[in-house]
Amino acid sequence: LIAEILGQYPEASTSSLLGTGPVSELSLESKTTIYIVEGNIPVLFKLHGSTLLYPTVFGLNRTQGLTTVRYI
Image 1 (cartoon, rainbow, N blue to C red):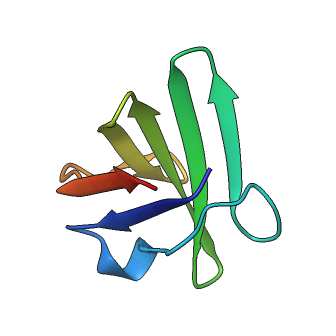
Image 2 (cartoon, rainbow, N blue to C red):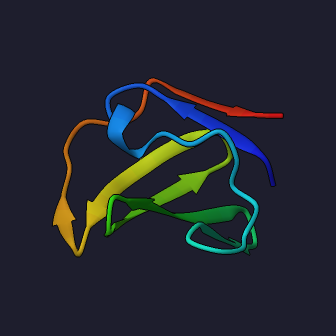
């Protein structure tokens, strides 16, 4: 999976999510969980289809979502 995420969290944006190294990706049925390392802080994004749901940092709710989730 290669994705570009832009929007409310520029500090968590990345040009590629390859499922290796500091960035990991898990596909579970129709849901995708993407972990992005923000500095040394892993940020958890839960996606359903192309919609971002409930971005969290160590279980703390981040109420804003991303404006764009683009799959290449």
